[in-house]
Image (cartoon, rainbow, N blue to C red):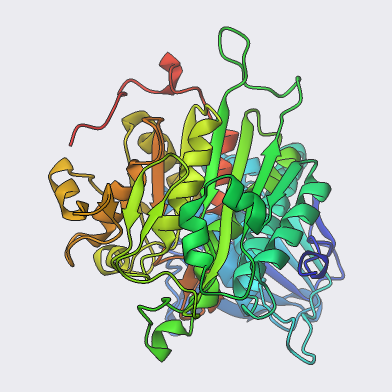
Length: 514
């Protein structure tokens, strides 16, 4: 099974009070103006200028160090902007510049005196370092990563906080790696059945309750959207449900003592051919990653216990292939969704919203305080926001603000888009409650307006990750292929969750007014 091939981060990663003698490469930071971030170190300004090194964020300068080791000066950029993003990108640059070294150290001595806590700094550095070090190598004959150890160097006063950051960073980095592994796996090797097997294994590893519905159970549950999309494939669909229950000691309770529930829903199309509305050959090349939303949800749930999430979390992943077989759903067919509403299928390549309609209907039945779905949903969102920013839409201002704030802290860019009620008419159908595609323009918005029909007025946020779910190049902490975008945002949101009906959740609240 795929999960058995994904091993958690096991390389020695430790916090130390000084740079070990054995390391082959040491990284340390410098700000624009060539002021070093480490007390007691100075740069030769003329030497740096000769090499055109200005310490811009993400830049590196390699220099000979003591005892034959290599020193890597890392650009931290503007000192006034030092934060988690700085450390994440600088650590990623360090990881990329020390490819052949077996033992490396990142010197963050005194980082807490520069305006960022050691815990936050180390957590971000671990995420960035392992993000950039990621490789999907299951089908490579050799070329293993030579790295044997990573040491983070801090002062004695910072050690305790740094160790907390290291453990959190490792959990989050590992969850992101799992999502990337799943999304990078070829569709022929990761069918809906196999994805469900992975989810069960992750549940066992993470202390979760797992339920998987097979095709017969999906039909009995009236998940017509999922069945309709699956009809053209020889691969059987699955509905994956994972549940995390916080311990009593960690639980985030309301004033009445009850524990809030957050439902996460991820789109799990393990391969999208477009169905009978067939994609072009070029358009299919990356469609093994159309289950990135489900991968995010599975990976997020798997990390909840290790991070001490204080709310109950229900993860739902409707998963299937979308293929043009002889029994495939045809344009003009009408599907009945779990909540009783019907959708006319006018384009079988708009399948994600069909399976999410069932997933969101099930999520609403959990009586959740909040629903967040994550999906590679529309090319229109990529047109609007490009390949680095996810679209964020929904029906509750407090929830949207909380998800956006979490994405900012996690270093995953999101941008709020409207859900104008005036556009709802674009998905009106003559034969059903709605159709699954509107006009060409504003496609990300009309897709989200369809999803809104299935959340039963629960506070809901939708993340369209069609752009940032994969990268076409190596850049910063990203490597070509699946990115795992969304995992850090979801985990940050869950770890910092406050009940939406609590005054502490924010001054602005209520439904979004179109």
